[in-house]
Structures are given as structure tokens and as C-alpha cells.
Image 1: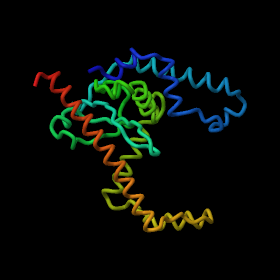
Image 2 (image 1 turned 30 degrees about the vertical axis):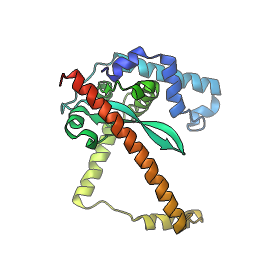
Image 3 (image 1 turned 180 degrees about the horizontal axis):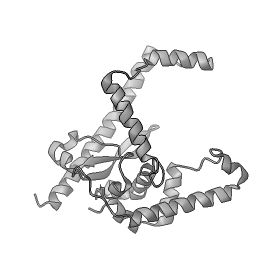
Length: 234
């Protein structure tokens, strides 16, 4: 299996930029500096920034994970708005081989980009079919705290401080009902409540969507396990 960096080097840059902007479109009114610029100027600046970001990842030195856990990306099907769609997950190879479909999926926004580009990409037909979408998601997740992760250290500190508050019992936990009441008072609007018959049908639909997703996930993970075992000659 190839890793993320190897795929980034092979795939077409302009198509990667297009997919990136599809999942993270330009918000033309999101920054004061945009108000004095044309749409073309804003788009050209944004696409140029993404191209330079992709090239940076292509040439960056891959960093081996300190804990030795090899990340792996794969695709599986889900239901979205009543339609067949796909999603992408990251799992650890050793955990997958040990636990099978019970292996957990992990977020990787807080990981260094040098480590992210070393993730393996599953060679399953479904994953390869959506390789541009997968790479666009990686490109979108990796700069969660800045294209060069300039804000990563600050966010790590915030996360660590929040964890300390939870562990020490000093974190303030606000019940949903309290939040709901405050929002209603602030907006002057009440939340729409389903009737019991509606809730029953709604949960049946949700459970069916979850079953569909879980079936596809297990199917794809079994395929990934077969690939890994074949590579290892077991």
C-alpha cells in the first residue's frame, strides 16, 4: 500500500484543488480583507495557497509515529440525506489486525502533518474509486490549525487544560435542558419537538442508516485485513 504522500505526488494537482474547494468552499464574506477584492482575486489567491500547501506536503519528510502505531485510511459507504454516500476513517494497523471490526476509528486533526502524510491508504476498490475525495479530506483535516499548523501548539495546550479540568472535577457541565432554555430565551423561538409516533419512525430510519453504514464498514475492514495479511505473508 502507498502512503498519503505517495498518492499526493501521483494525483493531479488541479483536480485535488477542485475537490478541496468542493468540501471547503471559499466563504467570500468571511474576512474583512475580502471586501475590497474581486471574486477572481480571492479565488486565485486561495487556489494558489492550496497548490503551495499540496507541494509542501509532497516534499515534506515523513515522520514515523512516536508510539509506533501505523495509521491507515480507508473508505466505506454511508447514507446521507437518504442517498448513498461515502465517508473516510483512520484506523491503526495493529489494532485492526488484533481486534478486527471492533477496531476504533480516530481523528487526526491534532497530529503533525509530517506524520499524517505517512498514513497508509487502503488498496480496496471502494477506497481507490474515491481516492481524490479521500485526499481532499486529508488536505482539509491536516491544516485544521493553519496550513503550516502554526496554531497547533496553542490548541494542544487548550485541550490539555480542558482535560485537566475534567479530571479534577472543576469543569462545568451544563445540561442540555439548561442550554435549550437559554437559547429559547435569547432567540425568542422554541425548539421543534417531534410527536411520539414521529420519533418512533425517525429512530427506525436512523437505525436502518446505521446498520447500512456498519455493514459497509465491516465489509471494507475485512477487505483491508485481507490485504494486510497478504502483504505480510500470513
